[in-house]
Length: 173
Image (tube, rainbow, N blue to C red):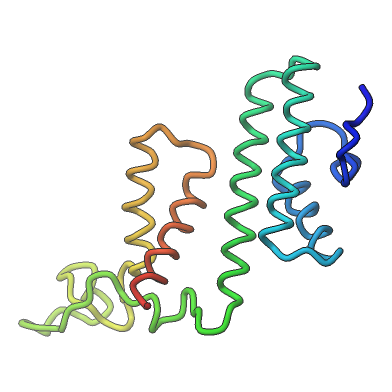
């Protein structure tokens, strides 16, 4: 089938078959190297991936898991690239201690006869040796619970940490 006359970018920007996370990421990087900003590169990548998947699905009867897997990879690559981009902007400090404090800090109180190496484990007392769960980990765990309850599977952990980073960024602003 010939390409539509309005096509400005050739499909060979993607290797044959269903594009995966690595192929989509490489495509966006090539588009950026060619002068596109991230939003434009992501739109073009989305267009090319969706067009490829339409051909695989409709014309070649690709299995459903091939198509949905590639869609998940498109979403994962988009989120990962956007996260990397936002964390490189001035003023964004992802995962630094002042940005990602302990989730449940508390002052040491009460009986200090418990050996320090067991403080956190036995008494729940916060110490610098065992600071406990970070706020990022707590936010990601909460997001992951919701994602899993909603039936999300592949990529849910990565997306949960993406959401946690967004929550921390909102909290810092």
